[in-house]
Amino acid sequence: MIHTSNVRVIEIRSFFKKVRKLVNLSIILVAFLSFVYFVYWAAVMSDEMVLDYTAKYFSPLANFFFQNDTSVDIYRSTAIILAFLIIPCNFMYFIADKIEEKLIQRENKIDEIIEQNRKKQEKINNLMQYDIINSYSICLSLDYESQKNISDETKTTLNNVVFNKIKNVLKIAFPEVKVNYSDVLIVTSFDFDKYDAIYSTILRALAKVKNVVEGKYELKIIPNTFSDAYVNNKTLSQIHHSNSEIKKLNFKNRALSSSTFSKKYKYLNHNKYAGIPIGEYALFKDNSTSTYELNVVYKNLSQTLASIS
Image 1 (spheres, helix red, strand yellow):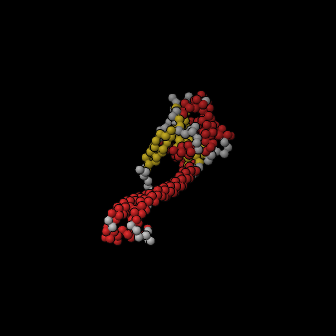
Image 2 (cartoon, helix red, strand yellow):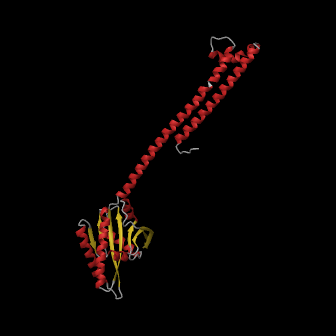
């Protein structure tokens, strides 16, 4: 049995089920009457007195078919006509099936068109949720490890050296991108198609300057990157705040991205820096909660940089 949730199809099937029952009853009735009239004709032929007492019951239908015939043979002929009426009754059964099939096909076609329109609208809605993500940022933070104590002033100086080198490389390769830094290097852009090239340039530049700094000073640079994307443009302070929140989660030496960025990135069929989802993380502060759904691109960013250099 075929099941459907279309109310019209259910109504059509219910109606034609009744029609077929009516046709079946008609066939049974016609066959029964044909048999009765044949038996009646045989009885009349055996004893004409039967006709005197029963003609008023059988003659109306016989006279309907044979108005100008007064012989008893009209009862046999009526039986034959009734028997032949079974054929058009069966044909009505066939016609009912065909009409039902056509009506159901029409309803299914309407359903198909509605479903196609729904899918088109759903696709449009899905495209809109990606299209409204129109900008992204890449944040680079640096931590330092050394056997000697590193003052905050020294960290600031080292940050300025590293970030300035990377900024100069980026401005030459991608003059349209915005690069700002304080304690964090922040790169912002609207061109998602150039993300791979921009991020690769950052990693290559970081790998080179990291080697130089670590070779010159007795320390180790621990980098962290975080890529995020936005529906509405964010200010530098907002981007900086989000990056600071991520750092509080104590992800050291990692390359991370947000779920929003990952969604847009994969939609554009990019996969080089897609990352793997690692779950949702929450930060609690002053009776408020901030949640971040993150992806990890590199679990050991230093190792990746070493392979680049």
